[in-house]
Image (tube, rainbow, N blue to C red; front, side, top):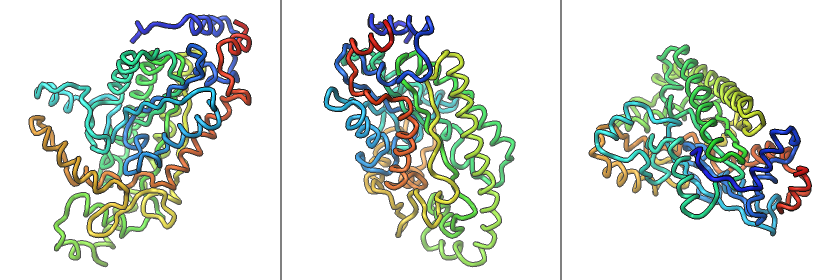
Length: 390
């Protein structure tokens, strides 16, 4: 990735930065749309199911809402926002050793993509970046002209079960959060920053999965569905007596969910800060989730998808996933891994619904606006040369 060619203008811009001519409040996104003076803006999305918009129609995903905002309010009629999305459900930041070994033994490429709703750990988020670079170069787009990279990552390396399992040691969870949300993400930001040196990298924050305000019955029912508990047996398990026991488990799950929400925020912020210190500039920023314990899963005003009737999740793409999950899992029978079909079908559970996605889009816009100038529609090279004293 370090051999990516740089345009002369960007080289001059970098020299100016090194000379101290660029300061913190310079509108970063203006410079990043300058490639060739066209005003076009390249926007890359990589990551897991959160940024991918699991269960949402394309037009409702918060990266689509962000693209529309960039087009209408930032780039304007002088250029076009080109969106490339490589994110998919289940993606690890870096592939865990077990899955990597299974793919290699099956002689499978590490960069083979499947439908984005299918929750496979591969390709990893790091691999998504590598593929994006190849695709940009193949299409004649200089990776230096990518203005914004949006990413979410870290959760799937731990897994949902690893986060809310009330029987696990909380210290293990804390160590995993540091390892994946800080260590892995910090390493990833370095690689992404090298691949797209002129891009702003927006790291999207996660949210608490459940809280004391979550309905115990809704949480319990979702667990039974995820583990595909036989239909005729559900009334025996989901009753007033078992719910009393589950209330105890609910408290433990809530505690771990809080550890996750607070810890992932802290460590993702630390990863961003460490990257910016290495880069010598504010190339990355953290976007805090608008979802908290008052509107997470199973709450009265939840902004997340919940279980519907007859074992279906409420999300818009449940029917689609029942088809693509079956096809995808059938196509990887040669890979010695356990692929849970029911978990794949119900993968929309607990992800932002349309209202939650809009809330995320507003948080993203609020985070980006301070980096934009009032005259950001003028992205010509000559204008930038004057602005940066090149």
